[in-house]
Image (cartoon, rainbow, N blue to C red; front, side, top):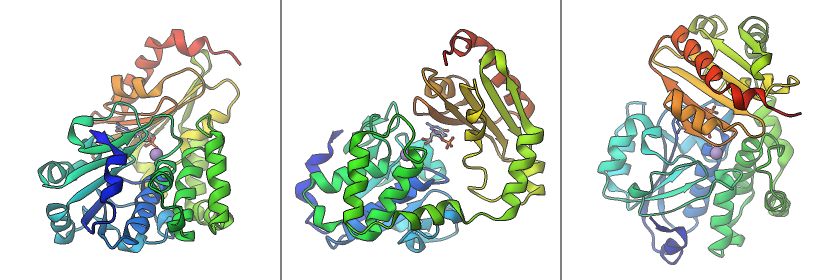
Amino acid sequence: MQPIQDIFPLLGQPKKVVITTHQKPDADAMGSSLALYHFLNQFGHQVTVISPTNWATFLSWMPGSKTVLDFESPNEKANIAIAEADWIFCLDFNTLSRTKRMEEKLMAAKAQRILIDHHREPQTEVFAYGISDTGKSSTCEMIYDFIMTSGNEDKITPEIAECIYAGTMTDTGSFRFPSTTASVHKMVAHLKDRGLEHSHVHEELFDNFLENRFRFIGNVLLNRMEIFYEYNTALIAIPQTDLVKYDMRTGDTEGIVNYPLSIKGIKLAAVIIDRGEERKSSFRSKGGFDVNTFARKYFNGGGHFNAAGGFNKEPLEEVVAKFKQAMKENVAQLSSYQF
Ligand code: 5GP
Ligand code: MN
């Protein structure tokens, strides 16, 4: 993988470009994709953003989201764009399997694949160019760096600023995680100078939920959460019947894993959701417990040191049993937590 700077001299030559990200994109995945989309369009490139799956409705306000193709909806456009692309940008993921059914098409494409990402253990051999930096708060921050270091500060529009802000704000837990460096705050100040209306982004992301989601969360916290104080751990296991009963849609369960972390003493929080075709898990930790390694070892997943996820094919009860076993195996690290 050659350094990302090597493509800077080529930015001025119009190309067919595809931008893609991980399945069920979150605000960082969608924000970084759309920020790059608006940026590259200014050079006259022909740019197509493709999501491997559908995405949450709370992202549909993002400037440009109406143009994004869903690879799973029956439409030849995405396949043609991938086959004909010169460049395929892969944002906010680092192993092609995170694109589900798109993986095969991405591997077969003649395009050069370009990585911009902040997760651990990248599959560098499949990328021609790229940057992988686990020290970065978000892929959105990396898109900002890409624009700035390629000497294109003047191309940051209010639309780009909103997209970048949305991903950085959400990936840093509203600027609270340790990944929120001085550079992040300086970037936000600069985005404000470039026309960012940050209150608008917060309202769009956090004040647009339907009542049923809060009823669902009430049910989950009351009936589905188990606390294991001797392990400083909380587990929420959600059966598919709950998702159906409360009419949960893509994105409605995002953020639930963070609730138990607000309980005094909790160091590891896990949510395991029965999504029918698979059991999706999310892990969050505080301090020195590495959930990336934990998710890789037990749950076919990965991510960051303090935020990771995975999936299993076994029934929910078996995945829950697996989690409890894994928790016991990690008792030394989990129980030694200092507050
Ligand atoms: P979430 O819990 O929000 O789904 O994911 C937390 C973090 O872990 C995100 O950065 C996400 O990209 C990563 N992640 C989630 N699921 C998986 C997975 O199955 N495999 C890998 N490698 N990373 C994941
Ligand atoms: Mn991210």
